[in-house]
Amino acid sequence: MTDDAAAPDLRASDADRERVADILRDALAEGRLDMEEFGERLDATYSARTYGELAPITRDLPGRGSPGVPAVSLTKEPEPGDDWGSRVLRDGAGDAGTSTWAVAVMSGFQRKGRWTAPRRFNCFAFWGGGEIDLREAYFADREIVINAVAIMGGVDVIVPPGVEVVVRGIGIMGGFDHSEEGVPGDPGGPRVIVTGLAFWGGVGVQRKLPRAEKQRMREERRRERLERKEERRRGLEAPRHNPLNLHTSHERREPHPREDR
Image (cartoon, rainbow, N blue to C red):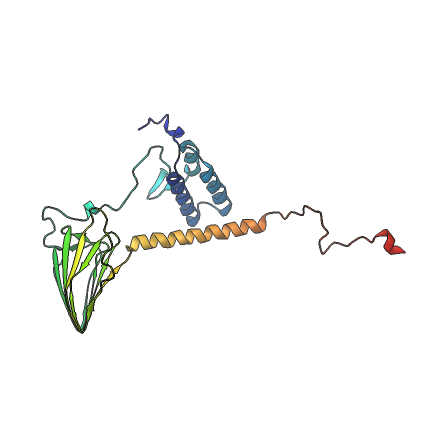
């Protein structure tokens, strides 16, 4: 690493500029910047070449999740990522899990949010339905088994990106969803095996983004709409040029001398 004196001379990367642009968009959405200030700072961000040029742009703005702290650090930090190591428990710490079974008879059940999925989860749905949502779950092991029996009912299993899915269930006048099989998982990510029986019923498997990621994408689309709106406004306010000095429709045209005869 470089020392603080040399840090301002470090060349900024595209990722550095995007982080600053995200902070500016947050500030615009929160009312800390007006449209004109936002446009000026965004232009300066994408033209900056070093950390020293980026730092003043957000010096008076709080960073994400740290109010009162300068938004741009002059030290390189690793990019945040989804750490499966913190969600897949080891050494038998999560053998029992938060819940190991569920039953729905002419009713329903749900397992979602921050819960620990055990090594084997058994569920039964008769004239009812169940939902097993693993998007925010912890995992008792690298490989877990969901044994689902659906009789004239249904069970839905929801997994996040990065999870490998294997389906081994048997359907009799019913079926198991195999659409998510074959999608490779992340290194270190868990493997979910869905097995059981579907009789006049079904067991579905869906892959969905976590709620926090969906919210982040919605916010990003909203910021993009604000930027496009601002670009259109600035385009309408730009001075109109008339390089040929042509007469406009509201100007009176002077008569030609020959026309008086």
